[in-house]
Length: 244
Image 1 (cartoon, rainbow, N blue to C red):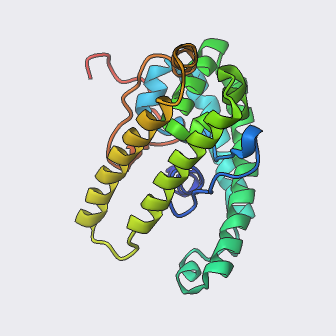
Image 2 (cartoon, rainbow, N blue to C red):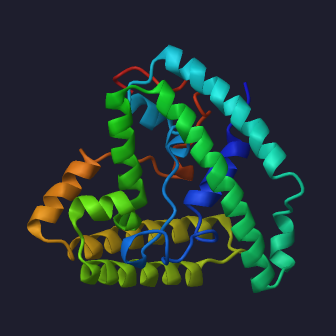
């Protein structure tokens, strides 16, 4: 069975890495815009598949989606030299990353569309809640979230400053030559910063908006630590015994 490392590397880079994180600007009301967490990326986590009660039949269908997506990605990214990014100027690197992100977004939407046909309504509702939880404060830039919470332009501006400030700090702290221990320490700090950013962003909301936010996110889900807990996309680890 194919491992998810290739496809997972694509989606993780698109949605989670500070190197590929896009500043707010455009793409939504109030000038806010951000990458959303692909559903297919979350479904690489066995813990998420267990939360959604993914069936064996659904896993089989997602195995097929994964195989097709891996081939599509290999074709779309052929000739893209990630190692060469280190030696490029910032302008050249930004251009290449933009190309990568555009192709990745297109592929991600294609995969997510297929996943949506596999999961039932209840599963999709929970998956969307988990997407917003995983995105954290950045989810407050989603057009549908902005509309649901009825965020004012002033609130959007305040949230933009909070998230942009946190993103800038994350980029400044990133060290490509860090040791595994230093990277782990940096990841811990990043997680702490993420929680702090979300707390500050939510403080901008009023009581009614906070209630709507709670509805959008649903019951809190504890995402796995370390490597984000990715297993095979659609693999057979989806439904471990309840006592595990």
